[in-house]
Image 1 (cartoon, rainbow, N blue to C red):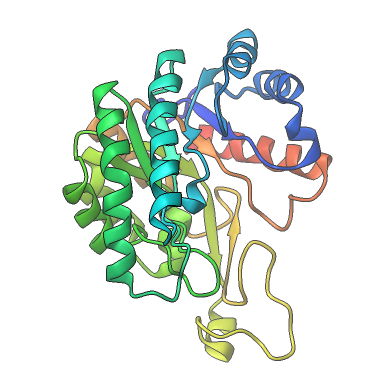
Image 2 (tube, one colour):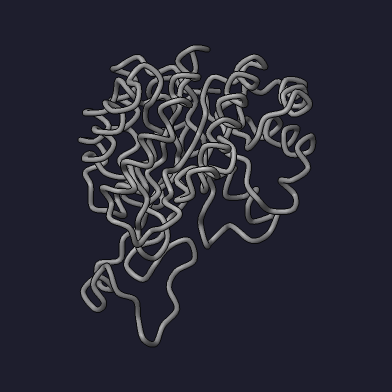
Length: 292
């Protein structure tokens, strides 16, 4: 059953917990729960058969070792780029059309401009391989760890990176949770980058103004632990438990004719950690998104 606004199919991104490692069981549960697709990590023919047997659509698949594609060692970087070029061609032959990545510098202390140059160099051949097979590379704007050194999180580097690599194959994994965390207007961002949005993550962010007053947004507390999947002034949540304007988001996507999946990425301290809790979070997410 699709969403009310835009009639989008809802998928889930496979997580890392023990019960989700059993792909046949996960796929069967997802289909029974009403999901219509699934995002995977590295794609194999066996995985694809499992997804098809469950009656699910294949969503995104991850590029290989994405955290090392911006390695500072030239040889290491070149070897991984070559592996990813081959993988994109192989996986596209199996039916993958959307390749997910995050631009994570190996050396987060380097100047952003230097890491940006590494990213353009590394992704040029991968972007061309994707263009050759009619696939898309979608970049999620996760800011990274404590130093928030990841690239393509804000309009400045998204705009430049798409231009400097290959606009025909490089685009956006739209995830409003990261934009909200960073203070970027998530709907304005969507309107600007609509032509390049080829995949959507359904994840939300709750903000805590009192904590922001007490601690600011860049420093932690000397006395209290931060939120799980978050910090003191914010946390990631299931859709509908944060600030994302989902009906407006879906309206903008529908107006542009978006036909891809909307995939729930479950990162919420109130649900993650147990099989029962994670299944409940996924069920609640699906119910909310269908009504949005």
